Each structure stands twice: as structure tokens, then as C-alpha cells.
Length: 115
Length: 115
Picture 1 (cartoon, rainbow over the protein chains, first blue to last red):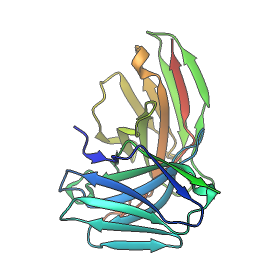
Picture 2: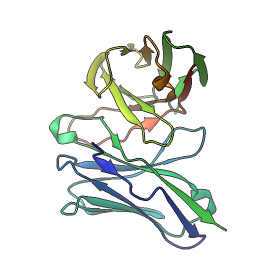
Picture 3: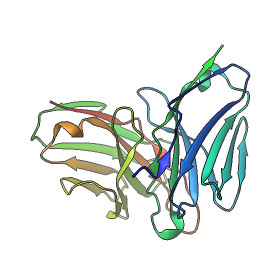
Picture 4: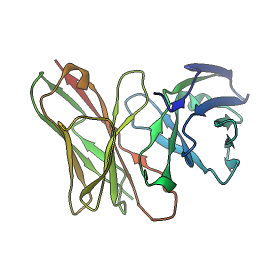
């Protein structure tokens, strides 16, 4: 069963516009969520995280929103830049229930930012 | 600060053989996790090591085993290789601090091809 889902395999946006990447999860025990960016031939790079006690976390151009009742989170990138073109993975873990460090990943969304 | 490093970069094996992949964790990190990423999928958690002991395991058979050494470096061993083991193997490290959320940092991965 896919506990973390990224239903959009790809997204294309114009440079300067907002990119919104979505992620849904099913396990209510998840209490820590992360976004990673991955370029070809490289490992995932940590972008931003949020714990379940918050509903928003911001870091520069990146903002993550968490809607616990809907079991949904999203990553907003504003403004989008061509260098943001990569595969974005959403990940979740159930830290409080002892599964520390076990990240469950979505399938990824390929973002293309056009100049 | 040295990041997570993995060796080798690429590896080709034949079915039935055994393989050992290596990982050096980021400086100051005491916990190492291994993930398998098949083509077009998100990374899947194999297991985690903390204080040289396995501390959590995903849905992988016993022929996937590991070690963590006193300097926090780690090995992933896979016996009796199968064609489906062909994937990118990622190592991630973090500092396991109780009662806090700590993101994992990934290495570049080892691309394993089983023929």
C-alpha cells in the first residue's frame, strides 16, 4: 500500500511563477514531513521539513503547508527558477511512535521550470 | 563538514552473486539508513543502524544485511542477487537526538545492475 502519494508525475511552470507540488498521505501516525529535491546522478537533497504541530514552514522561496485533517501537504516555490527543475519527493515518518528515521517516500514529481 | 559519501558509484553483478556497498556518514552523524530506489519510484527504506545495531527494518528479505562501524560508517550486503535488485542504493545519515526531529542527508548513491 502506498502510504505517501504524489499524484502528479510531472509539472511545468514558467520562470517567475509559483510552483505547487502536492502530496497526500494515509497514515495518521505520521508526524514529520520532508521535501527532497533530486537531480539526475545525485542523491536527494533536503529542502524543507515540517512537524505535525505546525501548519506552515517557510525557508526563503520554499514554503511547506500541512493540512492534517485532509492528510495533505504541499510545497510552494516562489518565484520558480530554471535551476529548480528536478524531481521532488515528499517523505513522511512516524517519529513519535518509534519509527524514527524510517522515511516513507512518494513516487516523486518532475518539475520543469521554463525560461 | 564532509557530506555523505558512497562507494562504488556503479557496479555490475550477475544473478546469484553477493555485493557489498559502503557508506561514510556525514561528520557528527551517528545514525545511518539505507534505501533502495527503483527506476521511476521513490526511495524505499531498507534498514537503519544506530550505535552499531539494526534499529528498524523495512520490507526486505534477510539476504539484505548491514553493518555499522564505530566510526559510524556502514555497509550494505546483499546475498544471492536477483534481477529485481537492480536499483540505486542510497545511504542517508543523521544525528539521532531524542525528542527532536532531525532530517536525513543522502549520499549520491550506488547504481547496482544485476545481469
